[in-house]
Image 1 (cartoon, rainbow, N blue to C red):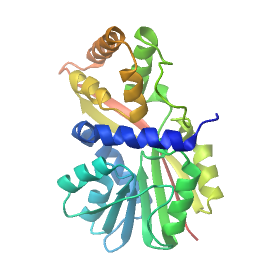
Image 2: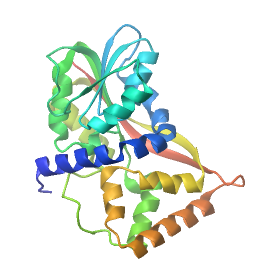
Image 3: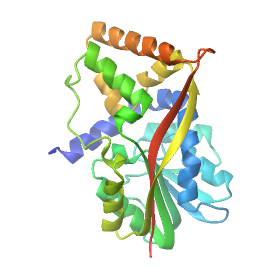
Image 4: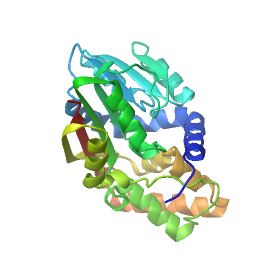
Length: 273
């Protein structure tokens, strides 16, 4: 798919700057459960230097510090970093582009990236940059969602858009395949092309318990592309989409009215030789 990488990057940056506070408010419960496997795969332990790329509200960097590591979180959205600094004042955060990291060569023992890969205009360049800033023997790990039809909230959202709205509504610049790295072969290919050795890919499961109303509210603060697609609908279509989401979520909820979701993700890692 052909697209202008710089235009897409500017779209993503503007979106995250606009939605930073709302995203932080709804993302902690679903995000944190997938962080420890990423840190484990990167070998994050006490006393090492860690870089968390696309840190967003800072969760990955904060958990690395909680393990006793010296961690820095980097993100290209200034508003996200402001949220991170307010929530985790003990952690260092720095503004920077994943595709041109503001650090010298061989600076870190581990680099992590939790669900950031789908937002990069040039993911190969971001992975190459992570390789560059790693010390020999250091490990890199990233996570990405499995295919949309396997991840409940993405599948529900796409079905509601298809039934009640316009999946091709304007205002969203073309970009990379959001679920490219659901394919383990793609993960291995980009890691090995960047020079990583001892590459591994496995599936992890994130269990999330959430009220139907909270799930719909979370989609209002969803990833930039999903939110932009929702915003591009007519007011009538948007109301119908949200009503359909809420109805399906309530149907799937248990006797206690809570959704018990198992959300599959891909975890890929490699070492710098």
